Length: 365
Image 1 (tube, rainbow, N blue to C red):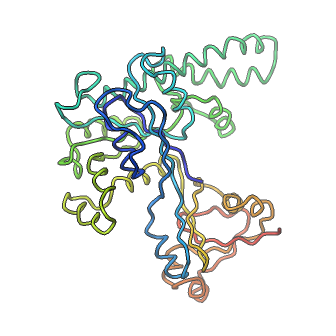
Image 2: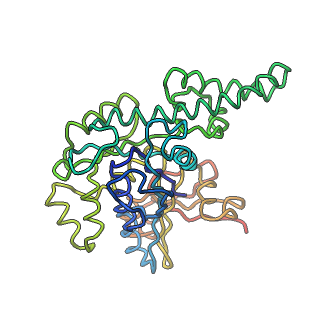
Image 3: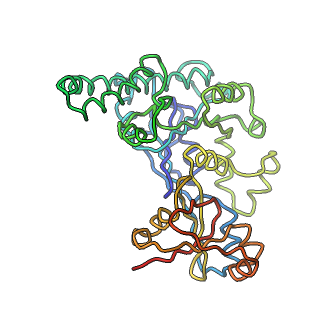
C-alpha cells in the first residue's frame, strides 16, 4: 500500500513543474498561464529507500521492487472556487479522491511569472485555498444535514449519530477551522473519514523556493514554517526548478550536482518522508533470491494486516511472522547470521510491525 497525494495550490506556483520533476515525465504542461493543467495528471513513482538495495545484495535477489507513491497534479484553484469560479468544481471533485494534500506555495520572486493574486504571499495563498475548501465542505454538510434532522427528530438512532458526527465538523467550519481539527473517539474516526470532507485530509505544505534558497529556505518559506507549526502540519522546502534539472540528469551525476548546491538528496526523498510521517506510514521488507521488495502499511498495523498487503490469503491463513529487524539482518549478513545471533523471532497475530522489519509469513493455504 502506497498513498495518493494531490498536488494543489493557486495557479502559477510551480505545481506542474514539481509534478514533472517528481514523476520524471513531461505529462503535465508547465506554462505561465492559469489552468494549463485541465485534467488531473497522475504519476506513479518509486519510493527511494537505500535499505532495499542493501537487502537485495545480501539476499542475492534477482529483482528489486520498491513501494510506490501516486502523485496527482490538480488544476489550480482560485478565489471563489467553492462557488464554481475558474475550474473550481473540477478541482474540488479531484481533491476528494486523494489521501493527503501537498499544498504547493510560491515562495520565490520572479517578475516574469505572474501571480494570480498580484503579490507573493504564501501564507495568504494557503489561507485562500483553505477557505475555499472549508466553504465547499460546509456547503456539502449543510445540504446533507437537513434531511438528517427530520429523521433524528423522529427518533432514528443512526440519523442521530450521523448528525452528531457531522455537527462536529460543521461547528469547526463555521468558525473558519478545518474539519481535521475535530476531536474524535477511535470509533468515530472511520465514519468521519467517510464523510468525504476535503479539510479532513492531512496537509503538507511544499515551499517552492528559488534555486539559491533550496538549501536553507528564505523569508517566505520561514513564514510558512511558522504557520505549519501553529497548525501541526508538515512542511518541506523544495526548488521545483532544481528538481526538474535533477530529474533530467543521468543517475551518476545527480549526487554531485546536488552537493554543489548544498543539498544532500533530491527533494523527492524529503517529500516522501514527510508524506509518510503525515499519514503515519511505515515500510517493511521481504527478501529472497527471487526479489527484494518494500511494502507499506500504516503505523500500528499487526502482522496479519501486513501479510494481507502481500496477499489476502496470507492474512486469512496467518500462522506466524518470521521477523528480523533491518539492522540485525544487515549485521548478520542475512537470515542465517541473524538467526545465529539470536535475532530471528517468530511473532504471532498480535505483533505490531516495526519500520524496517524483514518478514516472512507462515500461513495456511
